[in-house]
Length: 393
Image (cartoon, rainbow, N blue to C red; front, side, top):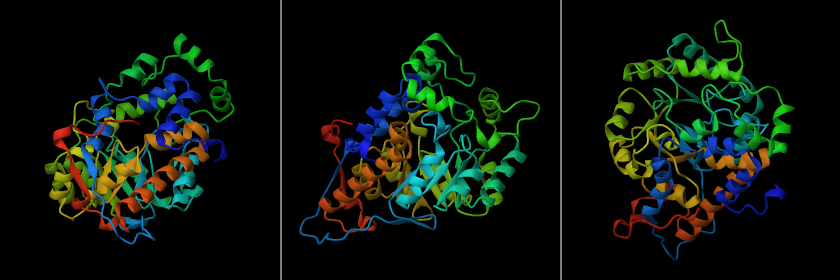
């Protein structure tokens, strides 16, 4: 991690990633849907809250551990599922899962991962979730569920906000879509990052590893696989389908993509043990609320019947503490560890997690709170009249 010692924040890792990646690839991490209003609001929403410290409290020892869906983790931060991580660094998911295990927290593997369910399952015995969709081909869904069960994944995480892909205009302009186009601009941009090209070309071909061999009558190339996955998104999915999947898994089960109290209550009613408040990082429907803004009403609606997790906009340890004070059991984050991955592979993911852990611990001490479990509404206040703190990330 020595080469990353000057990266003192997630913003520093983001800057390093931007220098190392072709612009189109960096935009693939960074971009959101349409005008990217929701993406920006995810971060700026935390600025609408201030932390309220307590003084003269013994904080010589602090506890950062919590329990989420029956599993103890040493840091209240879960690594969100992100697709095709080998795009950003040749190690990809193989770098992320061990880093999460060393930190004692959960790694959530994406259905669209570039390393398979089985490979990650065998790589580490750290806590793991598998993220899944309700696809048109229910037999393929059942197969993915059984593979995750057989590979030792603790929980299933159903993403429900991808009836179809959002309009991510950065990717469209850069030629990175369901059918990627090798435009002159893309090739020239990539040529300016020879290190990225060298590592990509000397590695096995980039694939959606979990659908290899599952595409009838077609090859397993990335473009073909991406088209197949896109065709599997089902606009007819309802709560009955989610309930069917909960029965199929018969274990800890989170539903990701919830932004209303009504939907949160419905999650619990059909048997979900986790509710993930998320707008998909602002990458699906634009102009929807930031997760931090709707978190309190969702916590009230769930009323302790399931664990509420916030996903979206986390860039600082203080963000995590604000979410916990508002009732979340933990947070999820994707872009922060992808910045680390792009900046330095496995060591970069370690650095990203270490930065966030240190910030959580330091801010907890400065707040006079010896245990994350003690965080509550008295530790945070909304600052409506001032319009929030300015963002400097």
